[in-house]
Amino acid sequence: MRRLQQGMETFQRTYLFIKKLLKDPAGLIGFLILCFMIFIAIFAPLIAPYDPTAVNMQERLQPPSGIHWFGTDNVGRDIFSRVIFGARITLTAGIMVVVMALSVGTLLGAIAGYFGGITNDIIMRITDIFLSFPSLVLAILIAATLGPGLYNAMVALLVSWWPWYTRLTQGQVLSVRQNYYVESAIAVGCSNPRVIFKHILPNCLSAIIVQATMDFGYAVLATASLSFIGLGVRPPTPEWGIMINEGRMYVLSGQWWMIFFPGIFLALTVLGFLLLGDRLNEVLNPRLEKR
Amino acid sequence: MKLIYFVLKRFLMMVGVFFSVLVLTFIVSRVIPGDPAFLFAGPQRADPQTLENIRRMMGLDKPLHEQFFYYVWGLLRGDLGFSWHTGRPVIKDILQRFPATLELTLVAMGMSIIFGISLGVFSSVKRGKKIDYIVRLIAFMGASIPSFWLGLMLILMFFYYLGLLPSPGRLSIYVSPPKHITGLYLLDSLLTGNFTTFVDALAHIILPAFCLSWGLTAHILRLTRGSMLEALQQPYIVFAKSKGLPEKVIVYKHALRNALIPIVSWTGMAFASLLGGAIVIEYVFNWPGMGLYMVESIFSFDYAPVLACTLVITFSFLLANFIVDIIYAIIDPRVREVL
Image (tube, rainbow over all chains, first blue to last red; front, side):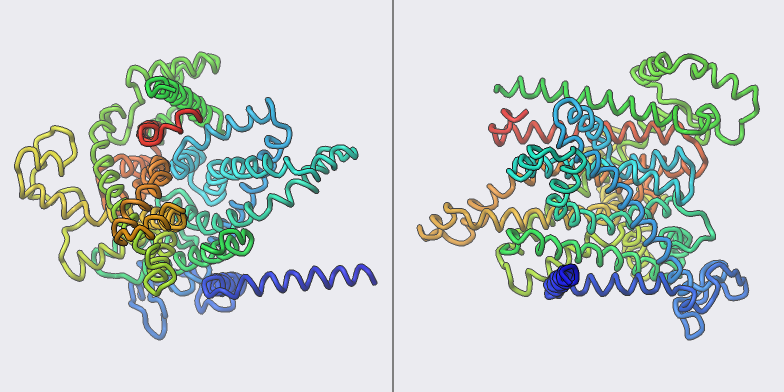
C-alpha cells in the first residue's frame, strides 16, 4: 500500500513537471517536434510509400508531385521515403553519441571531483588536452583515421565530446561535495561508489540533463556534418547529411528538392532539442527564470 | 602580477598544451588500428616494397618513443609529410591555402561580432516585447539550421534564381588574383589599389562568410542578451537612470561596456567553432582553403594532409586563445591573479 502511494506521488510529480515544462510555447513546440520525429522514425516502414534505396533511372530528378511528394533524386529514389527512413539513423546516432559521451564523461568527472588530489589532476589534464582541439576538427581527424562509416563517425564524436561532460560534472561535484549531507554520508561509513552514485550525482543531474538535451541536437548536427563531408554513413543508406551531399551539385542547376527536404528535417530536429533544452534549463534552474 | 609575467606564464602553458596535442595526434596516428605506412602511402602505391621503404623512412621499425622524437623533430623543421594526391610536400600546400581560410574566418568573425552584439543589445533593451521574441527565434534558428545546408540554399537563391552573386570559388575566372602581400585577397587588392579585384573578392566571400558566421552570431546574440540583462539590473544603472542620463548613454556606455567583458573572453573559444565550421563551408563553396584541402584529402584517402591540417588548425586555435587571454588581462587586470 505504501509503495503504491509512493508510486502515485512520483507519477504526480512527473506529471506536474511535464505540465510545467510544456506550459511555455517554446517547450511545447520542441516537445511536439521531437514526438513527430520519433514517430516517423519508429513507423518509417509503414509511412514511406517506396523502398528508400530502390533505384529507378526512368524517374530521376522529378520535382515534387502527387506521386513523389518530395521529388526524386539523381538515381530516381523517392526522397520522401528516404527522408522518413533518415530519421531513424540520425536520431539513433545522435542519441547514442550523447549517451555514450555522457556515461564516460560523467563517471570520470565524478571520480575526479570526488577523490580530488592526483586523481583529479590526471583526469582533468587529459580532459584539457582533448578540449584544446576544436571539437569538430578532432572528430574529423579520428573519423578519417578509422575510415568512413557510421560507427566510426560515432566513435569519433564520442572521443571529442566526453571531455565536455567531464569538465561539467567535475565542477558540479566539487560544489555538491561541500554539503553536509555528503560529509555525513561519508561519516556513517557509506562506500565511495555509494556516496558518488546515491548522494552526489543525483544532485548534479539538472545541469547534466540540460547540457545533454541540447547536445542531442548538436550531436545530430555533427553526425550529419560528418556524413556530409563523406565520413559518416556510406551510400546508399538514407541519411540526411549524405542526402544533402548527393544533392550538392544539382543546386547549381536548380534541382532544389534534393537538398531542401532533408535539410528542413535536420534543422527541425535540432531545433526541437534546443527548444526543449532551453525550457528544461528554465524549469530546473528557476534562478534563471526571472531573466 | 605584472602583465609581462602573465604573458610569459600563459605562453608556457600554451607550449605545454600544444606539446600534449602533439602526443595525442601521434597516438591517434600510430596506435589506432590501421597501418600508418599504408595510410601515408595512399591506396595506389601500396605494394609491399614501397610499404617497407615508407616504414623505414618514417622510422616505423623503431620503438615508439624514438618515433615520437623523429615526428616532433620533423615538425620543427616544417616537415608535415607528403601529400600524394597533390604530389607536393604538405607544408607547401598549407602555406598556399592558409590565407584563404584565415580571410574567411576573420570576415565571419567580424560579421558575427557585429550582428551578434547589436542584435543582443537590441533584444535586451526591448525585453519581453514582440521584437525580443523575434530576435530570440533568430537565435534558435541560427543554432539549429545546418550551415552547409544554408550555404547550398543561398547559392540556389543568389546564384541560380537571382543571379546576383557569382558562382562558388574565391575569385571569378577572368579576374587575376592581386599581388601576393598577405595572401588575403581583400587586403591585398586594397593595398595595391585594385578595386575590380576587391569588389569581385568581396562578392565571393560574402555568402561563405555569412554561412560560417551564422551559428556563432546566434551564440554571441544569446550571450550578449543574457549579459546585458544582468548588467541592466545592476545598482549603477539604477543610479544612472535616477541621475536622468539619456537611455542611449545608459545602454551603450554603462551597461554594454560591462556586459562585453565576459564576451571578449569567450571569443577565443568561438574561434574553434569557426575553424571547425570552415571545413564544411569551404567544401560547400569550393573555397580553396585548408578545409577544402582536408576534405579533398579525406576523399582521396590521403592521410598526411588531414593530420597536418588538424595540427595547424589546433595551433591557430591555441594561439587565438592566447591572444584573447592577453587582451582580457589588459582590459581586466583582476584576471592576471587567477592563473
